[in-house]
View 1 (cartoon, rainbow, N blue to C red):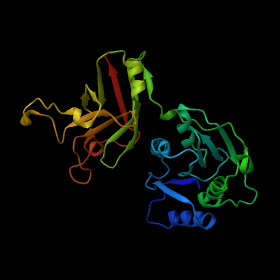
View 2: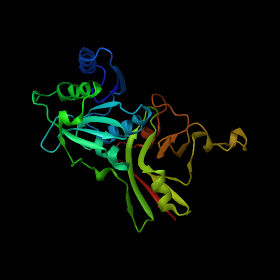
View 3: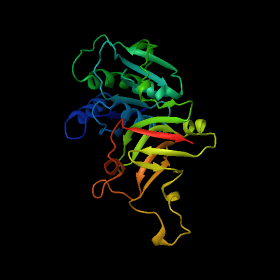
View 4: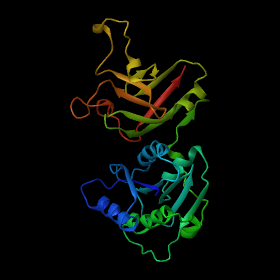
Length: 276
């Protein structure tokens, strides 16, 4: 039986997640359900894409991913299923799936057309669950919809290259559990324009001149402890997904604060890299 994952902005206070799981188990008693996250910021497409794109590759091919963020169908956001890198993604055409496919082309995409579906305010239950169970039983995409070629591609979330490649203007796309700030600038883009030059990462009134490979690389262990940088200091790294991340070393978001609160950064705020 294929794995079915759930990524939503439903939270865990209400009954919605339980209803989804109960409905899947009613259809497929042997189903394997994995929660990726239910704490996506409401309607935050970029945050959903970041979490999903960095988690789905750890699952076996054939896994079915239900995307329950901004899921109501509109004339501009049709319900779709995309087969990408051997994985099935079911959701509205809001741009989440388009962001996941930014680095690879989908093998197949169909617009969902279930003859017995009834439009209401809970399409994740009434449409996406039906499609997921159909696929999990071994059903084909041709049965649930027609070929679709118009996946939304949200270019507004891409970094901008300006001043003939001397500057990259990025933005905050995610703030993690530690208050670390993840930007939309990836290592391959940074290196493509760096050409060995020195650089400054500009954020608010701070300038950072080095991006580290890991948090502990930030500390010079050859110095006396009293002279070292350490807890409470600002640093930048390429995180495990190769995005530039800003962090306060050994921070605690619930006590002293993290990079997001101490720097006053929020979703979509600007981060600049100047090459010298």
